[in-house]
Image 1: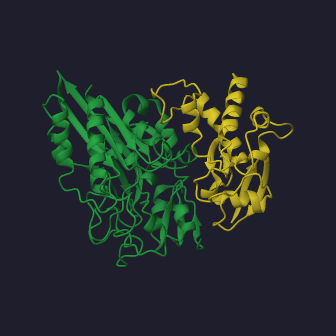
Image 2: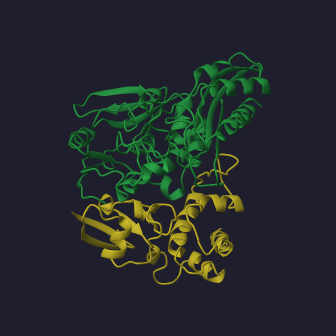
Image 3: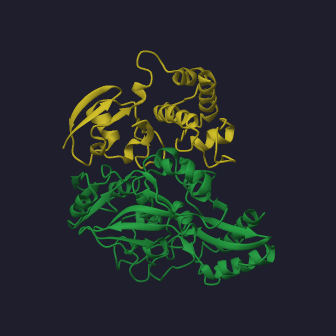
Length: 167
Length: 324
């Protein structure tokens, strides 16, 4: 099936079997290997990309369903220079093996937007925001991203710094 | 994943028509269906993508809200009307899955998500839900995330949804449409079947019948609580969950709708247990009586006995919070 996909601002025409997930389309067809295949079942978050402005698990989404849509991957977060969040990850040593990092970066980027939009979370005491990025809020909102090296202290510090820099 | 045809209709009637093909399935967010297709637990021969049907809106419908079937869980949880008037629904949605999954998962898809019983997912294990008549490896297997109410000798699988528990407590109704364009609206209670000897048949939907919306009536009660107990702090299915919608007047309970997750093959309600509360002043003895009634027919297996005392504590805690 022929589809059109705009990834990191570039529009591509792809001829895909409907079985191809968005993750496999990005990695195997567009050679954008930043998005990682971890569990491949939506549990680890390594494949997280931003589609239509929202963070999603690219492994559980069929590429054909994104026909005409726009996707941002880790390669698109800081194209000419690193984004403030990416720089913060470097400064705070927010990675070890680096496998989960692209998903953490895409997820955190979109999560900070959700926070700006006043979306509540499971741990929010009240349902009407705004919300501070407390330790509990950060952990809950990033719970869809696992890091098997357990670099969470660095990851969390980096996300906080990016948040504070943006404010 | 097995090969399948892919259809992307632009109107509900065309979607129902396409889904009338044998082996076809509707595809909404895909967070559960695509997962099951990868594991070949499900192998539809055609997918009918619902994303272009215009069912992604939340609209006021006079008495409450009409939630389009493809509204995402995150949009629904964040909607200001839901947050202020139906907070139990926001809370239930936020207790489920991860941010990434809530951005894809939909209202209709959430109602129809399949059980998380590990034996259903393991295609080498016997499962009456996956393969009718095969037997049930969960019985006598490792049990923790299994049901204690409404089970049968053929199946002990749970309905996994948090959202559906809140919708049960809110007396939501489900709007359906079939391939002939016929529409009907049913209570949540009438959507789900108990397993009996056909656990593969989970709902009362006809083949190719499409959930188009969920109707959310104005809430009967101003006190709404959702509590979820799970094995880890976030991103896990419920061991026991409970949604409560209560109203009180002059210190007495005037309305009580209590729904449960983690206990049964469908979002569970027991109106007899609820009726014990009406006209009464809240007390620990009263809450214990409600739990007694709720759990009178509980049938735990080895490994799920803990759910009986856990459910008792959840009932007491939620009722305490809702009647403060």
